[in-house]
Image 1: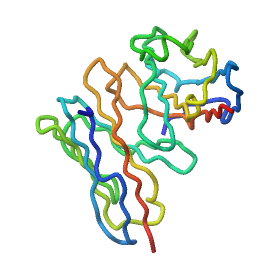
Image 2: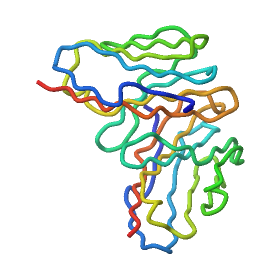
Image 3: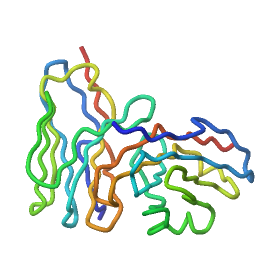
Image 4: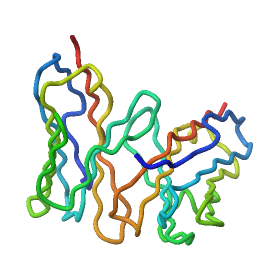
Amino acid sequence: DAAVTQKPRYLIKMKGQEAEMKCIPEKGHTAVFWYQQKQSKELKFLIYFQNQQPLDQIDMVKERFSAVCPSSSLCSLGIRTCEAEDSALYLCSSSQGGSGNTLYFGEGSRLIVV
Amino acid sequence: GMPVEQNPPALSLYEGADSGLRCNFSTTMKSVQWFQQNHRGRLITLFYLAQGTKENGRLKSTFNSKERYSTLHIKDAQLEDSGTYFCAAANSGTYQRFGTGTKLQVVP
């Protein structure tokens, strides 16, 4: 599988604190996706970037998250004010050429909000 | 209903057994991808299909866009096949939608 790197692997935040997770997509990939996974259940789509521009995102991300891809080699997903329900595994994936192409995933950042 | 329905939610197989997983789509999808999620959380790509059937060792996957389903067949199950399997399907221009996963346990 391609190498998508995510950092940190784990982070623990208190309610109300800010959290930030970073993703380095596979070199040459133009699409980046963030997903949230709770308790090994299905992956919930959060936001999709194409050529560093956000093309689609869910309301929760618009309201409480901050996500940017300032360069093709680094993206970040932030939570402005952590809530208990944000505890989850955050998975970043990238693909060549946009949605519908093969996705490659990182190992994820596991956020625990206490 | 859900755009991607995946069955079964859980499966227990003896070593050497064969079985299959299935994803049904509520709408026409252009591509499907199957993943195995390991104990560390990483999603490993098993197959990407835009149509037809692909095989890789003991695994085989089929995607029928017209009939709106995809299958993953595991032959001669091994202990290392244990994990959670997901399908993810996309229509052009949209993000991949994931199934609810199948937790597979292979026992000796």
